[in-house]
Picture 1 (cartoon, rainbow, N blue to C red):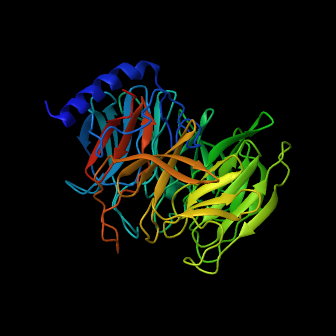
Picture 2 (tube, rainbow, N blue to C red):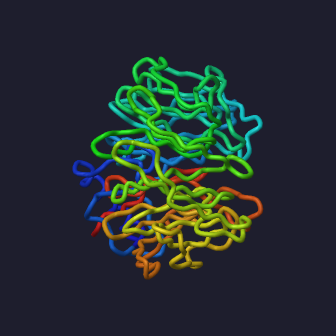
Length: 434
């Protein structure tokens, strides 16, 4: 038996055995939307330069990342035959067998990078919530794909679909699901009943950004933290009441794509955008208006200060920020001041919007790059230590004016496996320790 086939077989056996005691990845960036992966018993070093696939399933194009819950993997894509459609897909976690698919008509007009949907499917209490690139919202039975309700939010709320489409994943908050749509009459964010799709609340008069809302907790009180095109705000998840809001005024255009990073150790929020640089806010347990600690911005997208992120959400830990700057430089900042601690140019090749995604597992940071490489690393103020790296997928997305194809889809980590997509396939890679 060839080594690659033997590794794939071993991986499949480990995957099957691990599911019963493994974590899920039910929404964008993991269990708590914080890019943390808690499973143990995973590799400390890759066994080969190219990781074998436990399984591969054909899919259409899209930028959305997979999610995993209750032994199923969910993904969205866009196809043009027999007609232009967005689809919500469901696969068996162990085998990659297609379980169900829901398709609906969707013609992309006035959408740049019109490859496919961007937002990850959110799974909660047996329901799957999908949000298409043009604002189509669906609640589906997660096991069968039966449509529970569907709404065109861009039409229903006069929503603002930005030039790169809707990217903000739905956020389930109790018995409501929150969408960022930038609608009229104070419907910047809307919460719909998870069972019926009826409006529960609306909040903020604002344009849409590309950043996803998330839940945070301070002093035992929960809040929806949202970074929109005009505001950074905390909302009561039950009522939508604005607990506090700070104006956000982009200098050139709404291009805030990374999520706001909440550091529970310090109750600070870190923001970074491609043109507008970085800033840090200090939150308080009583949810009074936050105080801005610092703001740093370079003179251009090439001559940057602190950190000018495009897509990748930075990592904040132990008083430092780790993130990808505008043209692919990997940087470490002091969280207190924004001062640069170190710069690395080995992780990514220089290129406008060069991209990588960070997930923390114990003391190790797992990084997937736009070239389909996965890296086990240790990040400290002393530098970027590359422990091990391997190729996990072959990118297929052409990007002007890059000389190489890219993948801009955040993977899922569940069952001691990596689930990732290209324009043509969804793959499962075992990361279980031998």
